[in-house]
Length: 261
Image (cartoon, rainbow, N blue to C red; front, side):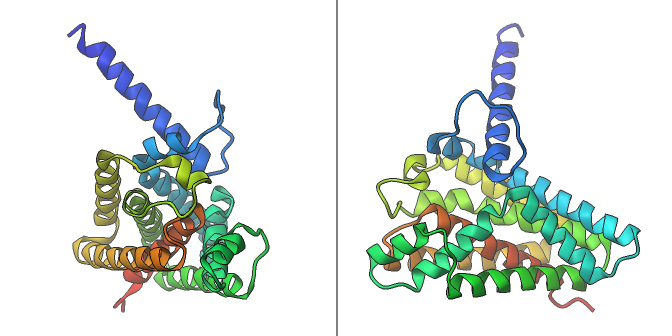
């Protein structure tokens, strides 16, 4: 009993530390941290990304509920919900989506990677970003109710982030430097735990049929994104990880609204 207590305390400290790293990396909440976060820290804490996503989705749901409380339309509520998630994450993944589509529309491999590092947004990136925002807002507006919207948002943000550790482990970095290269590949236990957490959240939020449909679509998106990254730029970057998260959100939200009468 005496020996078990220090082990339990060490495990709780480790979990709390990983959650803290996840919050600092994936959101703009200013938590105190003794040292800068490195790539290895993110890889170690990658299992916690679905948990952070659950929180992001819940904040979006709160914004939707406030809009409904003040009598605003479902469309306005949906737009405010998405805006709340953007403010929470600092548009981290939206930036990756835009840079990825700008880069993949470029010329040589080196030119594509150069475009991805350019902070300016081009036509491909602007169109991809606009479509992502439109689809997410439209999907949430069609659910028309705080309860269904909350469940869809939580499922989308947790489920989309659950596949990111697998992508990091499955696809090598495209560059020798950068955040994804520094992170290395997450452990198998992190990949499995993140996947299980994300799927459990989807099951609780969407039900069995929609959750399995979303899982199949997420795996298809993951496979297509892997092939595209390997063919176009030789691997993954931080931007492509952000793009994958955005595509995952859209897929889950569309699954949540499919065949609703």
